[in-house]
Amino acid sequence: MCGIVGYIGGRDAQPILLQSLRRLEYRGYDSCGIAVLASTIKVHKDVGRVEQLEKALPKNKGKLGIGHTRWATHGKPSKSNAHPHIDCSGKIAVVHNGVIDNFQQLRDKLTQEGHRFRSDTDSEVMPHLIESYYQGDLEQAVRRALVDVHGSYSLIVLAANHKELLVARNESPLVVGVGDGENFVASDVPALLDYTDRVIYLEDGDVGVITDDEIRLFNQAGEVRRETNVIPWTMEDAQKGGYDHFMLKEIHEQPRVIRDTLGGYLSAIEPEVDLGLESTEFEDILLLACGTSYHAGLVGRYLLEKVARIPVRVEIASEFNHSNAVLGETWVIGITQSGETADLLGAIKKAKQMGCKTLAITNCVGSSATRIADQTFYIRAQPEIGVAATKSFIAQLIALYLLALSQAKMDIRSREGLIRELRLLPDKVQLILDGEDGISKYGKYLSTYDNAFFVARGINFPVALEGALKLKEISYIHAEAYPAGELKHGPFALLTPDTPVIAIAAGDDTYEAMLTNIKEIKARESPVIALADEADEDIDKFVDYVIRVPSVAPIFSPVINSVVLQLLAYYAAKERGCSIDMPRNLAKSVTVK
Ligand code: M6R
Image (tube, rainbow, N blue to C red; front, side):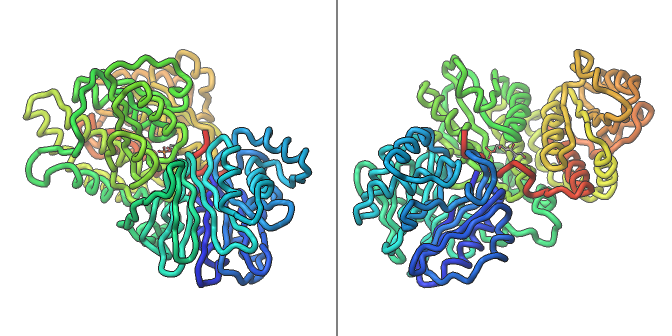
């Protein structure tokens, strides 16, 4: 949800800002802009991507600057709504990520005082508010302005006549990149990695004064020291590596991601799982997440209930935040790739206030979720750039298998059998990737339709939900997912020969019931593509097309089937010429509620 960047040092700021913004485009990409301090502040902004902005830019000289790539919340994507925003004097420029809840009230007050606004955004109140308190001391003006602001923000302030950047964070991520004789600021680490691997994560309530050789951070208690972290991955880890899209690269990384996530917690020799978590007393588990991570949570419920015999609920974080949930000795587990999803962070905070122990399952070291939750369990997917979550979903599933196995209530032989099967998953996923061409033709076939259904039963129902989400978000084909038994309770009305149905016919105890449902669907003449076990000899009689998947123990079928559905969505979207890594209206990390 918007990416912000800042630079101060001895080099020209403009190319650094543009490069950093390109790295952050996954956070939002409907418009962008930069401000560079030369003799005066030069602001350039427009709708569209960084590449377009760059083409239209004069070569500004200046060693200080800020930049922004936008995902619209207040006001449509337009040049005037793009950041940076400036005050009336043109001497204070601000980039902001987050939402200023009381912006209307502030805007009315500032307008009465004579400030003239040029945009529809909430963010524009910031430069005007700072201007209203400015009497020569930028730090004081920023601090005073923040007292009036309610909401979430990470912001960077640039002012004429000041050789410093002011930064502040509340409920939106902000990182300072530490250089030699230069410093960097950004919403997220990938923006910094071309320049430094040393970063400082700001905490909520922090205000910082950044010069080329000093980083001073303050909170309400006064000056604070924050640890400098060395990032263990490079920009190369986040490059396309010869693939057409990040999404395809990330799909292909999944065997490695499974191995890495298992390797971190599963002994190479013994069938022992060690998550490194302090033991927690609990009666039940509540899994909280959004989007794809929520689908991982739904699979997690099946796993934990089956393997660990623990009662589990799963809730969408944004709904939990408005619920009257009753929690007892509940272990609350938030699942989030980014660790920055505002709804999820709010939900973990609420659970903590209710006295629950909390755990974050996340991909991002140092993210907000890791600092809010009592404990953290890192998946090891490495940076995921494609907006559509793929490898992080598979890694979340692996984390949930490990969690379930760490709490297993079953005989030792069954548990060891599951661990043996788990170790085979990378090779099984590789088999699917090796058969990519066969799957791509069904993706191309789907691309010709406007609507599609996904059906499954049991542990694969969340996989159907995820398959439909992948298809709709990147190909814009309308897709619905249902438990197969539920279709006849309403959705059947939409089945026609123009509505292909993707049916997951897993070789588990739901198989017979699935076949019955598939026959019902075929009676409505909808084309059916089944995902079926390679050993299934019956399925061809009942469906139009079959995608064979490697045999695995039923409990692991979500991993296998999800990879097939990711490829289906990818090839449908590719055939339609869609913007696969940056689908319209979406952003990688949703840091607004
Ligand atoms: O970073 P998170 O896992 O908390 O993100 C939650 C959702 O926004 C995310 O899973 C989203 O649904 C996917 N990017 C869709 O592919």
